[in-house]
Length: 84
Image (cartoon, rainbow, N blue to C red):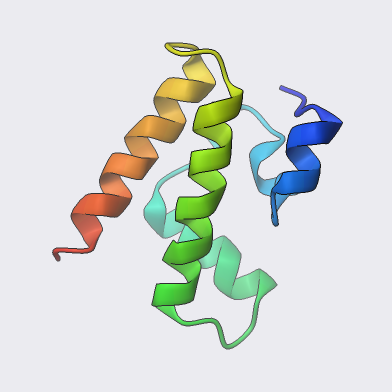
């Protein structure tokens, strides 16, 4: 998958998303990636950035595409994690 330059410029971490959706992983995978990229980042900051990134992806990809479904699924997992 290749992100369009327009979408990539709106993402803080386009390299994470510019790969097959199977490689996006879970919230834990994002957390690990983010902490490695941004030392000293809090869980709150990590999930705030993820939420923003997912919103951009959801708006970009065609509804019901594999990428859209994966971004929606991760967004749902993120929302549930706020209550855990």
